Amino acid sequence: GGIKSYKDLIIWQKSIDLAVEVYRLSSKFPKEEIYSMTSQIRRAVTSISLNIAEGYGRNTTKNYIDSLYIAQGSLQEVESAILLSLRLNFVKEEDCEKVNSLMLEEFKMFNALINSLENKINNTNLVKEDGITYS
Image (cartoon, rainbow, N blue to C red):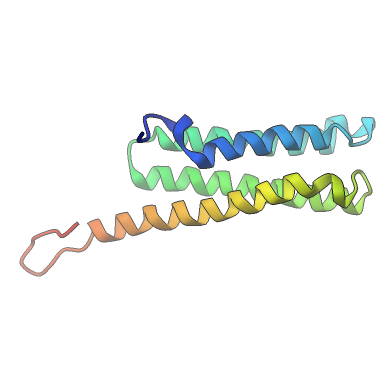
């Protein structure tokens, strides 16, 4: 067990699952959208896993958190693009079920992971008057 690399992170594994589903879903978009909406949503969804991987390899917890915020921003971009493509009738509600449930899971994981990392930083920063740091 234990985490040896970013590939062991559930949040990274799920982001890959989400990317596969978004590629699948966006292949239903109109062909003339290939250079706009299709490429936009694919770039955004790819960016999620890339930033998680990059962040995990960063030297500090703070840098890791920054990368997670960027990845979370890309997730929001994907969500927004899905909503727009529904309004434009590129896809139907039922086409989006898998993507929507994966996005919801991923949002929860980002919140949990970012919170726990921020708590870790805050707890490390607790210094008592006597100069001893309590972690």
